[in-house]
Amino acid sequence: STTDAQGKKNIDVTMSFDPNSKDFKESYYKIERYLMANCETLKRKIATNDKVNKNSISQNEKALENYQLGIDESEKQNYKGAIEYYKKAVKIDPNFAFAYDNMGICYRRLEKYDEAIKDFNKAIQLDPNDHTTYFNRAYTKRQEGDYEGALKDYNKCIALKPNFEDAYYQKANTIYLMGDKETAAAEFNKAIAKFPTEAAAYTNRGIFFMNTKKDKEAM
Image 1: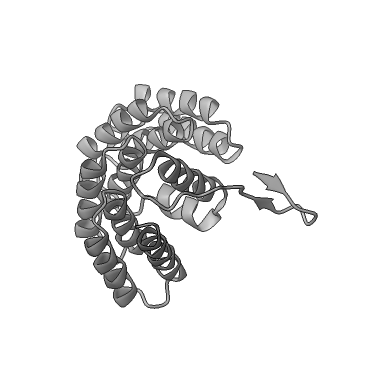
Image 2 (image 1 turned 90 degrees about the vertical axis):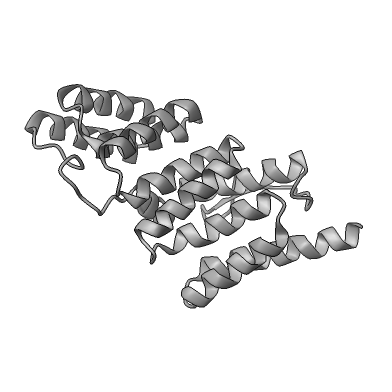
């Protein structure tokens, strides 16, 4: 990425429009990683857990203290340091689901996807009704190329929280990466019909149709 005269970050991407090509997938993930790192709204949505059960939040003061210190380090983008605090939190309280989820997010940001998925799995085991953990795991599975697994998690996320709009167009993006353009188009249209004021759904559909047009021109 580069920084312009106003101090704004820009992302430099040369894009292939064949969704099955290595260049396309690398460019797609480069854009997605940039958004995950720099879009405050998206970061808040992905990191927010709002469905609480008895294992979501620890009742142990020391575990909570380490959890908060982990959040503080995450906000400074010190993900390795954050992980150490989250590890302390779950050592004190092994049933602290949110700590596992946040630790998984940190591992994902460090591109340690196997470790991230292990922590998301543990969080889901402890708190199976938290839609955001399924969303977080889906994104990680997609980074690893496990599109089928990602799709299942997006569907579960939607089942748990039908008004979580990000899951709809991320599901559509996943289907597109799987090569099923017709179904992907239908899913983008469904997302827009359900969330007509959500700009990201229109943006994603626009990129999809642009890529589809490029594919046809290349034939």
